[in-house]
Image (cartoon, rainbow, N blue to C red; front, side, top):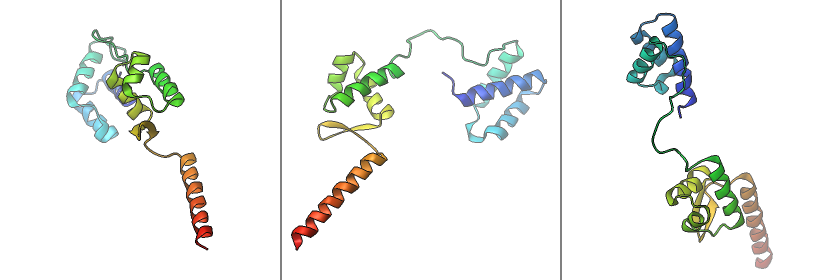
Length: 151
């Protein structure tokens, strides 16, 4: 699936084709507008020619081949619910329960949910404000206890 930036650039290319701008000028304009995010020169030329030949749609055509099924929103939700119930589930356990490929489960946990494996359970890589406050509270209690026992 094309990114939003690519769709925007295709719309700009389509516009320039409609106003009869030369292809190399289209690429220069796109480079000025999008900077480092501009699509490749070859990509601009391909889309330019397609629009010149009558194409109206800026979205990718359907492709044959293996469909993308792994990191879908439904699978992410399923894995998230399993981990919420039992943080000690291993990748193999989740694979067996859900039928989702091992590597896909790993990617969902690490990339989509931001978790890492630590001390036999899945924990957030980055602490959110709630977890930070809990750590501050615990540290404060430990410090108070240390100071009272020291006297």
